[in-house]
Length: 472
Ligand code: FUL
Image 1 (tube, rainbow, N blue to C red):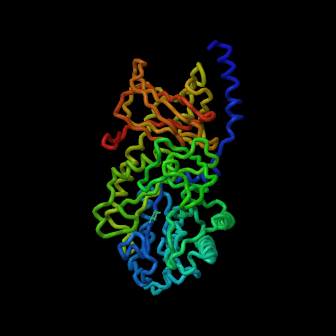
Image 2: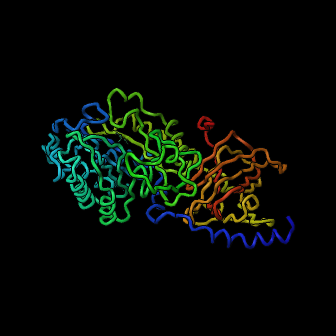
Image 3: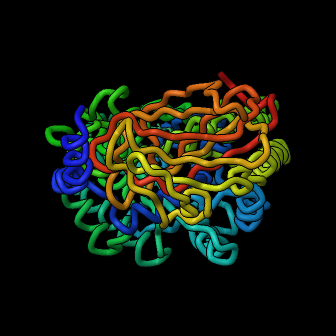
């Protein structure tokens, strides 16, 4: 390409690209949600006592009697694991309410626990406040107990229940609408008034993140294994789809839509045990710290959030099997990401031909970034005075301008200025964790090879993590 054309491209491209970039962006609440990264899911209710995963809805209330229930213990374990919040099954498919709802006769009030005076949501929301954790609720639209289920009246019941939740237990940071949907006690299936449900929540609590298969604020990642797509777009097209039975394919939910009209990032839900509820015979099947670390890499490390289920037992306590694994996971994570080797080097940015120093690329500040205007030409990276051994790179994209990187290439350069490794990737998003066999480098170079619009790279980090944690 001749020089003049190149110069013209260089100067015009930014304007052209930014003019093009009216793609969706996260709301303030969604930006804060991305920062949450990892939090607990708590499945707790009659199933904890019956060994079922899906209660029938006709379980006797008296079976719910967690004699040592201690929500502060849950919070202490969440904190010790590095989790930033807790979402609890306020009502699972069996319809049992963990709070004394006026709109049901199948609740903690009818149970033996604390002679019917207990309220799990009250205890947990207070404990979360005390420990500085965000509090969220799962409320199953499907209800196998409620006599009104399958009739228009049930929509009122559901709205009223949500009103109770938001009025008495708020602030509620995330609301989880489960996608499972079947028949009620009368054999009928419900026609849900989603529009009204959403309006109710927005009115009561505009900043609550509403999760469902298709959002509106966070989406299901398409599997219950906690694994986001290798390519993971925060955008999704939802027009023509409905919750429950009519969502996009699980493959689409897993990777999102590159040109999706809505910002609906993926949340990866997975249980630390085989089941969602605690079962005695699964005490020996708790995922180990390394498995949890790998899940973290395949969810948070692919730009999604990790919602890890840690179910308390029938006494109302998280077992030592689970807490030991979680503390082990935290240790692995902390040790892996403690020393950011990129900080030892000098950041640079090369928008075109001229290289300039750039401190923003390794300053640890997610709000400072370099903007890649020319895909395949602009680059950013880190140079080291002394050779460094690394096996993991973490990239971060500033999302306030949308998610733009489609493809990137990382070059690892030795002290003779030879590229000894090239690593290809697709999306970056909130965080991208890339691991590879140990390599000695004097320079790391990142080029965005394809982008929707100018990509803002806020951070390049480098680590030497325990080799046993590298999964290829
Ligand atoms: C599913 C439910 O059917 C499971 O019981 C569990 O709650 C899981 C998180 O979502 O749809």
